[in-house]
Amino acid sequence: MKLAFVTFLLVSLVLSSSFFDLTTAGSSFCDTKCGERCAKAGEMDRCLKYCGICCEKCQCVPSGTYGNKDECPCYRDLKNSKGQSKCP
Image (cartoon, rainbow, N blue to C red; front, side, top):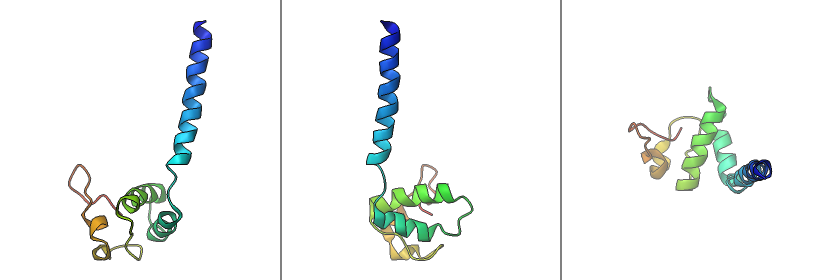
């Protein structure tokens, strides 16, 4: 009985994590804009992750691969827990 319960929990965990990934996928607007923003990033995955978070929250991404943050004040003003800019 315990083995069946443990198996059920493991299967539930795997299925729920797969569903969560699908429901949190970024919008095509943010994916496109962040792809452009992070085109020259040294750590592409990290750049895309944080750019996506910022884009979803602010609904804008500055043009270019660096700087131009004045185009989007919300994006510019988001800070991490250390007080540094959260958005690439």
